[in-house]
Length: 140
Image (tube, rainbow, N blue to C red):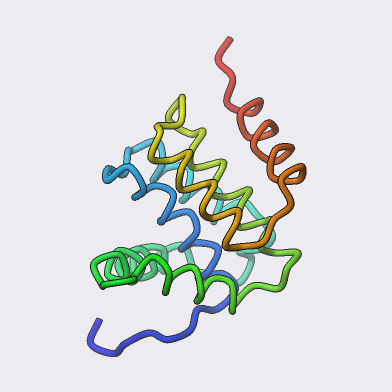
């Protein structure tokens, strides 16, 4: 992108949370990408977001990670775009992406901890969200 993005819309911030989660272990699996696409298509929070815009937001978020202090900038842009109640939604989406390909890696767990702190999400609420995401992806 030629212009520098300084703000996210609410939907872009939610997508960026998923992208950051998927990129936290330096590899975005097919399961993670599929989960991101499915969530954007199914959830009411994305009712006016075009699924093809995922690629644009992904490129923007990955570009931020290439910058010095880029992760902190991305956190700030997400925080600024989301009211507190939707920060929990962003955390849930990140947990869904982490759970999509099985066990979360150490890098993914560290990202979730950092993201929870940056989004000012209570530990008990975060624990409940994490457990719910894990339960949804249990294999029989």
